[in-house]
Length: 200
View 1 (cartoon, rainbow, N blue to C red):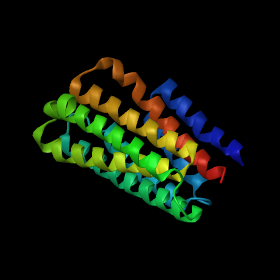
View 2: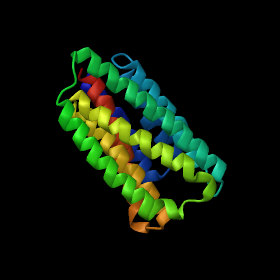
View 3: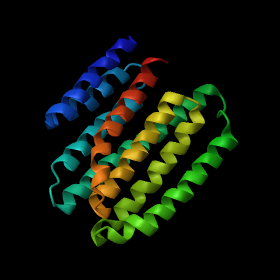
């Protein structure tokens, strides 16, 4: 059944070629669909991410739409955490707990310093709290993903962190070189986490 992952991969390729939003939605929703049987919580996280993606794709210069997008992605990360906890409980105990916590802690320290020094000063006042909260829950999501011992899942969440960092660079810092990296890593994240569900 792992061949099903070719479906979202095709939609992702079509979006990157055509730049049409519909293929972005289909990429994430098809990942949700193929995850639903083995990982319904993961499927829900992906479906909610698709809603967040709609707001982000249509936000223009409207801060409230941007914040709505962040809110849905934050909820998606909360469900990614639940998914990771379910996987950890199914194993009976976390794999490499100490190593995962150390790696997560080091990355969190680096990301928080980066956020405070480079991104947050450029974020509009209304958006500062949502950006901080989203960063914290996404770092927790990554740490939990490491604890599952599932390489595909952990790499997928790591790619989502990278994509979000590129959004910060592009939208707030004004780094134009970051823009082209956002969508490929975002789609690859969803493809990898869906593949991790298929291979269970």
